[in-house]
Every structure is written in structure tokens, then in C-alpha cells.
Length: 177
Image 1 (tube, rainbow, N blue to C red):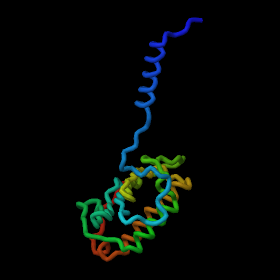
Image 2 (image 1 turned 30 degrees about the vertical axis):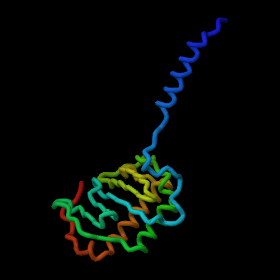
Image 3 (image 1 turned 90 degrees about the vertical axis):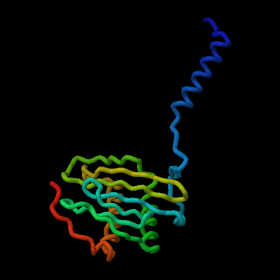
Image 4 (image 1 turned 180 degrees about the horizontal axis):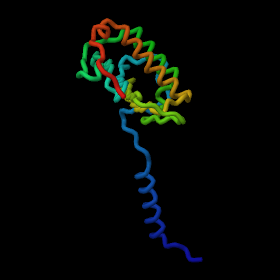
């Protein structure tokens, strides 16, 4: 058996190294990469949640606004801030379900489908890092992860729907088929 010349071996090693570096997964520096949220809620904790059919409802705790989908009429936006207690409750719930472990695009398995379905998108900010999760809940999955995430979004909506600012918004007209 013939030995490879040293130069050829060196070139192959360099090419292999560049291939491995080029194929390695890169994570943006502002993305949450820890597998858990910090024990204590960071002072910069905020989130933007879009939900509902076509994710047209939005709670933005950064801007302190809520946008309601009125279906047949144009959406309407109002100032809406969550209290420190409400933010703590939501943070605790996110931590309990280990929301950071969810993939960016969440596709839980199920054998059932529904139409119309809710779509969710949440961007979480904590310790200067961001985590985004997108989910089209058309599969009606009853997996533990789907039930917990859906429960979080329902809890957030129930907090919002008790606010006076929300109650003053116009009612939806029409519906989705």
C-alpha cells in the first residue's frame, strides 16, 4: 500500500477542517441558548405574543400595546400594560414549561386536524437574549409540550381579557370559516 505524500495529507486535512467549520451550526449572539430561563425574572423580561386565526391578535409588552383582530373590521390597537405581578406569573409559567427548550418552529404530532386553527408566534426577551417560537396549531396535538404551550397562551389571553383596556375594545364582527 502506498503512503499519501505529506503535502496531499495536509491539503486534505485543511479541506476537512474548513468543511467542518462551514457546516457547524451558528447561533446569533442575541439568541437565548441556555436550556432554562434564569431562576429570577430578569429586569429586561418582555415578550411579543401574536395569536388567534392568522395570529392577528398581539400583546406587545415592550411597547405596552394590545392589538385586537376584529375579523370583518380593521384591527384596533390600544395601550395595555401588564402589572409586575402579571409579568411575574407569566414568567414563572414560561419557566415551569421550560419554554426555552421549544424549537423555533414547533410541529407537535397528532392525527386530528381542525380549520380554522390558531397560529401563535412569541418572541421572548430575557437577559438581553431573544427566543422565538412559531406554531400553527392545526393538528390539535395533545402532547405534553403542546398542551403546556397552549395553556400558557390561554393564560396570557385570560389576563389580557380581564383588563379594562381590553373590555373597552369593539367586539369582533363576522367569523372565520
